[in-house]
Image (cartoon, rainbow, N blue to C red; front, side, top):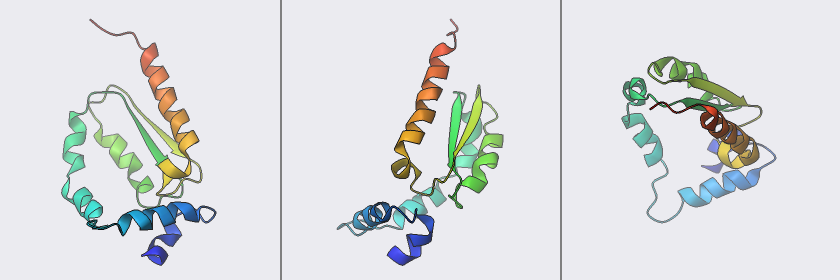
Length: 120
């Protein structure tokens, strides 16, 4: 499992892959269930129902999710505003790998939302 996932994690951060493996091998955990759950959920059908502003966050080295960023954006047809940010060098472990960069993007979204006048 470690070698199978190794190409998708940052080379300089074996701690991230080690943490995933530790969590995946915990008693009672089926590491493939998360993938199966994602496959079962038809997110594409729900995207047009979103009306809130959206900021999509991608990672340049995430070959699984990054290719879908444009398709997700295109399906958010009812969202008041849709933005996308791609973080350079991020991998499948983006949230753990680059928490400061992710936090900057999220804080900017919150600041942007706070600056928008609320309608009655």
